[in-house]
Image 1: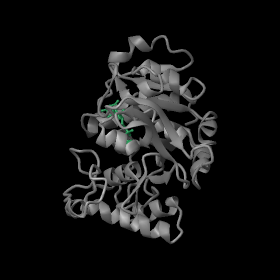
Image 2 (image 1 turned 90 degrees about the vertical axis):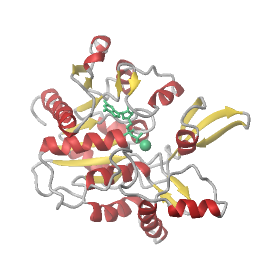
Image 3 (image 1 turned 180 degrees about the vertical axis):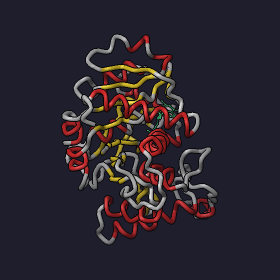
Image 4 (image 1 turned 60 degrees about the vertical axis):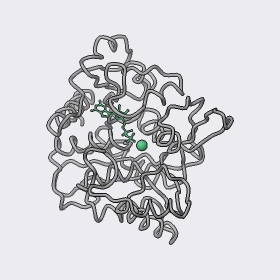
Length: 330
Ligand code: GDP
Ligand code: CA
């Protein structure tokens, strides 16, 4: 089975770990491509969170997927490296360097230096990501959604006035507490899908939307011209990131409010659209409220990714639904 997964950071990465287990893709020996299983996963990673700080290009969501699947993630936190230290961050602050709110770890910095060096030498982000994955061997093919610069910016207003700030500043520094008037995907209109993205979609037996942030993760990927259109021909099953009217972790409700979508499993399905979604997996708590969703096959089961076994079972349910909805073609 060939599965394509457009993914953000924590929610996407955790789900992908369960999906690998469900499909029997587990060998840490495989490279940026799975070789040991009849099933393959291609991840289209969100790069809208990317930011340039201290001359380094930082790709939080690509790195979260790479570290989580490659065994280098800080498990409790869900992002950043395990056994991390912050000497570089402290030294930068001692020089008065701004910003100070970004969690730049020492081990993580090495990844960003490799990336900065390769980008400066002219390699596209897709080639850089492949090179980084040579070390981490995530067992999936990890592609950025685009090699072009696309950045999510958020329009806010406070005592400093009305302005657009980078998504990371809004999310980390302000904890998404400053009301967002608008969320803009800067550069998206002229971006092209990265090499391999449209080909992977064309060859896919199914597409699974993990429980990633529907606005700034999945929404950013779908916002690259050509990607959403390509997915319309496919069997697409989504896993709801909203349980009982709340995002399980993070502040996705603030993102949904900014685009005028209610924080509910039903509203997110309707926002994604019945032209895109064939199936929608929701938590049992949301089953009744999703009965009214038209044109999308809704199934329910517990959706908390509380441990690897629970996450694997969620992924298996998503695969089963995709197989069923594709009439056995997937
Ligand atoms: P980020 O880029 O690190 O913010 O991560 P993602 O965009 O991939 O995922 C964030 C989303 O994951 C949030 O909207 C959460 O609601 C969702 N999420 C996190 N944990 C769980 C879980 O256990 N179950 C479900 N269904 N969603 C989850
Ligand atoms: Ca993210």
